[in-house]
Image (cartoon, rainbow, N blue to C red):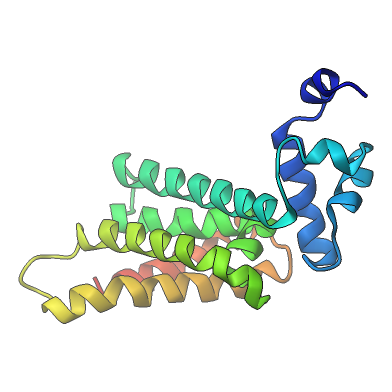
Length: 193
């Protein structure tokens, strides 16, 4: 197939979507560029037009997923929260929603155990945590928390949210199915702020 035709038919987005699914369902090491190409119905050579190697493809997935989560968190902090929620509660609830509505992405972003792949995720995880921490610190009441607490509270909240998502993601429950539990969890956590 001519390179021009491949460009038009096989988009970067299609490759990322297929690779994400295969990495989660079969594992990073079990997947090759050839198997991704076969899954999409293309030769593996057509993938190299978009990505030099499998690691570059994986990193592109990680970057895209963290960018999407970052946008969701930014929207949550800049919007008026739904009635009955503070901005920080809304922010935490949106984090939970992202995790449960995007289980494959969340697993790649935060739950992958492969040491080689962790190197690709750690920097993005740190950026995400820092974004979350910055947003939470904006809502910590000045004077009520020591500087040490202002540093520790966002990290503890983040870990608690991650634990919640990790627990429920195993059952593939939707956000709406566990919304009452998520809301109760967020309300309990917000008492520390």
